[in-house]
Amino acid sequence: MTSSLFQAARRILSTRRWLCLSLLLVTRLKAQQGVLDLTTLANYAAQPVPTYINVNKDNTSAGNAITNTGATLGRVLFYDKRLSRNDTVSCSSCHQQSAAFGDNATASTGVNGTTGRHSMRLINARFATESRFFWDERATTLEAQTTQPIQDHVEMGFSGASGDPAFAALVTKLSAIEEYRVLFALMYGDAMITETRVQNALAQFVRSIQSFDSRYDQGRAQVAGDNVNFPNFSASENAGKQLFLTPPGGGGAGCAGCHRAPEFDIDPNSRNNGVTSKIGGGTDLTNVRSPSLRDLERPGGTLNGGLMHDGSFNSLLSVINHYAAIPGDNANLDNRLRRPGGNVQVLNLTTQQRSDLVAFLRTLTGTAVYTDPKWSSPFNASGALDLIIISSSAISFQPNGNGTATLRCKAAPGLSYQLQSSPSPAATGSWTNVTTVTADANGVLLHTLNVSGGSSFFRFTYTPPAS
Image 1 (cartoon, rainbow, N blue to C red):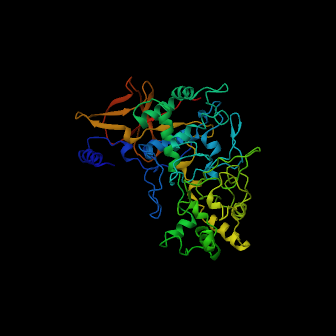
Image 2: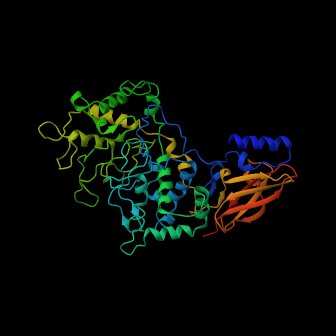
Image 3: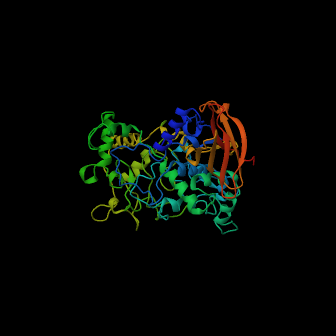
């Protein structure tokens, strides 16, 4: 609560003349699918980040820092299948929370077939020097990346080619969906939907997905640096960590040369890693990016989908074996995978060393990211929103000095909202409908009510029409 709001609330309570809005005092309610409670926005913008994480490794675009409101809108967009041409595919179809926001399938299913590359995990996408996205880095920012799958003929079908409608048709489609008019009005101050606004909201949500509660993080927080043995690690895990960090010339595997601890992001100068195959056959030398190595596996030890851009590696050991003996040279091979004289890398790793590296990589798996409701679907089982509860930041409460007070809220023009009251702000089941208020042509909800009859709490809600 801001200082001015606190002082206003104190004056109201001290005179006992005015009612307190539940929107100012509401307690956090248990997350429910289908109910989007904007009075208790999840913490996206100020999540704790370990002190050992490099603050300069942050690819947030200028002017689009994470906000609680923007990421909330992005969450709705991320999980909404209506962003695809035929209402069957959402961003979350290919980037599933249960798989560290990757896909268990080698190729993801879109509206017109399957993808040509394996879906990249989105864990800690923000914490990287690399600002380009996709395996081939064709998107210059995460914002640009977010709508390219929507505009892909195979993936979500608003390509504007091959008989597909263009992205402008999606804007028209979303603008006709009342709950999006409500949400965009709350997030941006007006109900206008544009590609830039969609991009910004989606990028904020994706950048908010972070994982810093792994065994690695627990150990790293107790020591001065990565080169020190972690007290919570086994001997094998500590040995694997040293192999990961140490260059080949020093007897290590040199993994950190491209995958840099403690973020485990990819060095932006990295080139092809020796995997040249394509899903469905053929050769592809354009793949030079990698997601963070965090959460390669989920807590139970199962891989979060196949590894590499073609999903062809089905175990961590197969990855270690690949780098231990690069199978062949190519024109785009990273020079760090070559040796003096031009030969490709061959590491003399023992069976135990390979096992140690696998043990270390498994310490990078967190837990909360797989279950935290702020990254889960807001929709009900039918893929719809049942109720939107309006954010306190969108509403003002103005005592008029005559036993009445005026509520004012920026909303979507022409849509009707329900004003509700309750004797307690904490119980969702106790809210009673007071009246229906329709936003005027300027998108303003305005209602004056009698506040001389005792204590009550008020809120605005919006119920989307049944589809």
